[in-house]
Image (cartoon, rainbow, N blue to C red; front, side):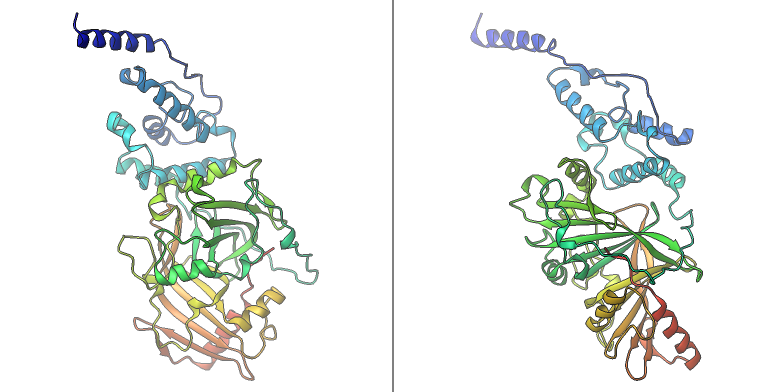
Length: 444
C-alpha cells in the first residue's frame, strides 16, 4: 500500500470517527408561538424557522461533520437572538417590533445569512413575501393618543446629569448631550415615537465635511426618543421622554463592538438599560445590516455629496444660501408631523432662543428675549431607506423665521427656489402665535 493510499484511508477513518462527535440540537414543540395571521406565519416558517425556532430542520448535508458543528452553533446562536417558538410570550408590541427588525434585516441583506441561502434557497423571502409582511404591520395605521397640555406650575426636580450611572459596559453618560446639534430626525410609525439624532462637535464637523465612512474617533451621537401625541391642532407632537442612546466612536477601545461604545438610559431618571454588559450584543446585532455605513442607520442632513447611495440626506439640506439665516447650523427645539399632507417640521433656535427654551421648557411671547430668532423648517417626508416603519425629511417645503425684538417680525420663504413670500398681516400674526406655542421637547 503506497503512502497516498494510506493517508486517504486514515482520512476516511478520521472522517467516519468524527461523525460520532455530534452534540445535539435541542428540539421541542412551540410553547408560545408568534401570534400572527396564517399567511404571515407561513412566510416566517418557511424562511426563518430552520434557525429561529425550537424545531430541528436540517438538510442531509447539514448533518455531516464537521459542517454540522458550524450549523449547530449558528442555530443555537440564532435561537438566543430570536426564537419564534417562544416569542408569543412577549407583549404584542414587542412581537411586532421583532417583525419590523426582521424585515429590515431581510431588506438590507443581513438575513438570512448569504452563505446559508446558497445551500438553502428556499429560505430567501420573495418580494411578495416582504410585501405581505409589510401590509400586516402597516406602520402609521394607528393614531397616537391625544396629548394633554403640560402643566408648568409645579416643575419637577431635574435629574443630576453628572450623577447618572454608567452603562453596564462601563460607558459613561455624557451630560452635554442636550446641547449637541441636530443631524437628522425620524418619525417612527412602527412604534409611534419621534427621534432627534444629535452629534457633538466632532460628529457635526464630520457631517459637514463628509468624513463619515468611517466616522472619526471622538464622534458622539445621541438618539433621543419621545412618545408621539396627537394635538388638538391635528398635528402629531413629541410627548413623554422615553430614552437617550449614545454611540461613542473609539475604534481602538471598542474594536470588539464595531468601533463604537454603546449606551442607553431610559426614563427621566436615566436608568442604564439591560441587566449586564451583554446588552451590547443587542445593539451590535440590530446595527449589523448597516456595518457598511460604519454601523450607523442615520442619513445625516448635509449638502456634502457621498458617492455611495443613501448614506447622507442631501435633498433635505437644500436650503438656499440667500436665506437671512442658516437654521440647519442651529440647535433644535422641537418637531412635529402633519399626517394630512405627510410633512415634518423642526423648530430651530439661535443661541439666544435656545437659552430661553432650556430655561423655561415652555413658550410664550415673553419667553424669548430680544435677539432670539426661531426658524421653522418644513419638509416633505419620505420612507427611511434603512428602516421600514420610519420616515425622514425629504425636500424642503418652507422656512419660516421669527425674529424677537421690540416688534416681533415674521418672514416666510417657500416654493421651488425658497423665495420670500408676501404674507398678509392676519396670517403672519396667526403663524407667530403658532410658532411661539410650540413647546420644547422634554429632556431630563
